[in-house]
Each structure stands twice: as C-alpha cells, then as structure tokens.
Image (cartoon, rainbow, N blue to C red):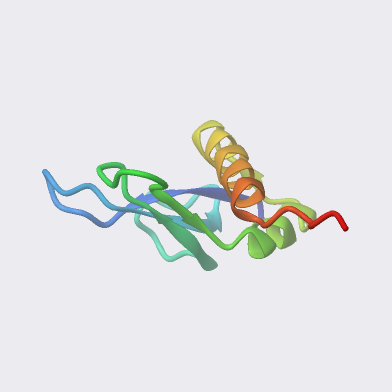
Length: 91
C-alpha cells in the first residue's frame, strides 16, 4: 500500500478550500483518507497553510511520499513555523 500526502478539494467553486490528507496513491482524489493533516485556503492573506508538522514528519518516516505541490507547501510551512518560533534570548 503506497501512501501519498496530497490535497483534496472540499470548497465550492469560488471559495476554494483544500484539506491536506494522507491517502493511498491509487484512491480517487476525494476518496477516504488515512488521516487529515491540515488545511490550505488559497484566498487567505498571510499564512494560508495550516499543517500538523509533527504528523507530516511521522508519515514521511513511514514512507508516505508528498506530491510535488505538497512538497513545496511543506517547505513553506516549515519556514513559517521557524519564523514564528521565538528566538532564544541572549543573556
């Protein structure tokens, strides 16, 4: 069973909303996923990607492959999380 981290569309025509899911590679786009990992709302200003990065790391360690789009979104989410983390204070 090959797993993919990919997007599934749940929004309407002019209100796009996507869920980030782990699903079997051969299942259809909106088929039953193994787990929901977050959301992507392209019309949102600021940070449109909300991901559970710890769960993404778990599934990547289990061999799930992200699609090209999700690979770039995961990189952006990691950069945003690193920027939001408070820097350690120097004495």
